[in-house]
Image: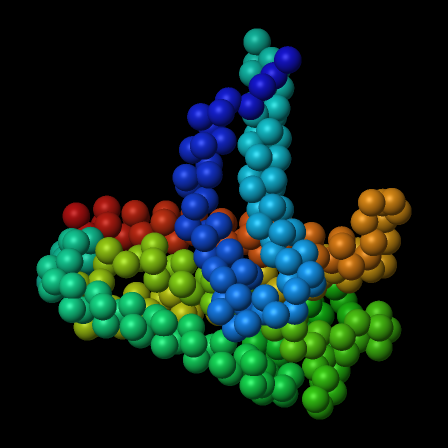
Length: 77
Length: 186
């Protein structure tokens, strides 16, 4: 079974830290500063989705990359 | 003279860097303020090129409707204020300034970093919004039958993936150009 190396995922997270922080700043921090928390459950749901999806996308992209490299390595041998 | 110092860290001390941070925050605040007060008509500077590019990509015909935005009658699709991508532009601008911050060492270099970041974030916002709207129009024309997600969920997920993915791509591009600039300066 092909597992995603943990170091790869950590490296990608480090590499995408600034875009991730910029995205969180605009989608969560700025609305919070403007009082979006007062809208209650609607904002909580929005914040949860916005916080969770990008890391999931990163892990998914790492998995796809690892699988693609694995297939490429098998084809070369 | 300036090109030799372009990659030198902080020759002028923290004063000019603080000024650059203040200018960045002022621009972010100004954009956010403009966006919250603006009607669709006031956002012509970003909605017009976006609508033209979406027309080229999708073949749809958009006509401007005062107070609403750009409407494609044949596709029943409206490019309105919330499609302007100002939040993406703000994120891209802040990120670009941060990525190029080591180049700030004089008033001229600070102005250059802010100008380049503003231009890059504007161009990226127009291009990314075009991609997002074109994808949204395609998804609207080809609705998927996923039991776990409704159309609004798919639209939201599409927005997150496109905007975050584009920020990552823009960051990689800025870093590559920055590295190349430093190599040329040496």
